[in-house]
Image 1 (cartoon, one colour):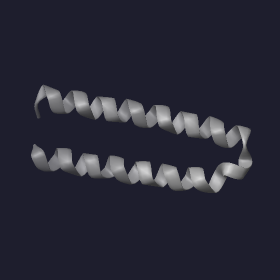
Image 2 (cartoon, rainbow, N blue to C red):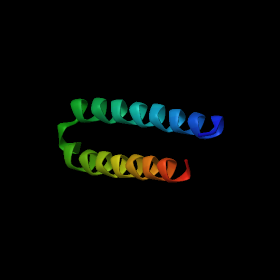
Image 3 (cartoon, helix red, strand yellow):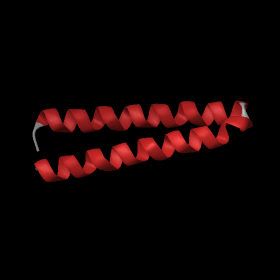
Length: 59
């Protein structure tokens, strides 16, 4: 695995964690947004899983 791929994986992981914490704060402050936020989180989880598969395949 090259250094560039490792850096990209770390950046994606950090952005995902930041997005998850922001969505958590949003749901905590406005409980009516629970369903749209759950949809967004599942979409983000699917994208991260796809990125992990792509990284594993390119190794």
